Length: 255
Image (cartoon, rainbow, N blue to C red; front, side):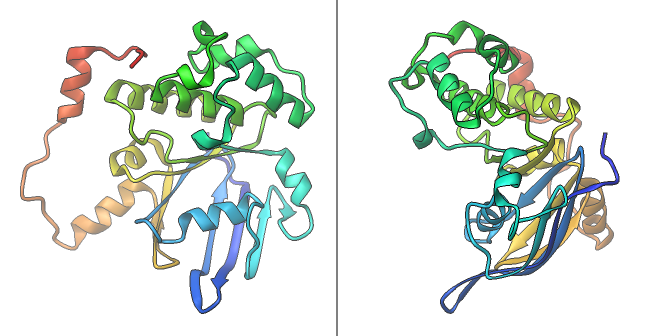
């Protein structure tokens, strides 16, 4: 349920590298309980924007508040209430999943039920498996599990379904929705527009360091159609991926 509270507020954010402007005066809000998508081609500035919000990169100008806390003055407090998805290189490949969860929970100084954590992402049968032994989909699920260790108010997911097969992708969508339904705000980046359309309450589309538009997916589609835009091919009520899922099943599976 999307609330009325602005849990992230970005005002006139700037990021410059010498003469190059990566983020050019953007402003937007994320509301508590929503799935917010930041979209754009490579080099648009979306990753830089998220890394600044996550306190991983310094800004050149502007203001950001996360749950009422300023990134200038309250970095440590912000880190306590967010979860950030790591890429594969962030894990020790020869440790098993319980060992990795112990490591991360120790970094956060919290006690967790490791089996419950793994079960929440469908990995309870991989409790003793080494990270390097996991399939691509399993690694993505585990990376999401690690973002939840500190019971964050906000989770940042960077292209979480890239390279996954259709079953893993659809099931990861269900997992993301479930995290949101449990009260966590989610900020996501993706290059899959169908994914953004299915998951996101609102999306902002970036290009050349600026936000070109921001609205709900339905509203943005309606705005485009109002210009007279038509597809060359009629859109049916299902697509080929729906056929694939229907024929092969929806369950998690190993690669």
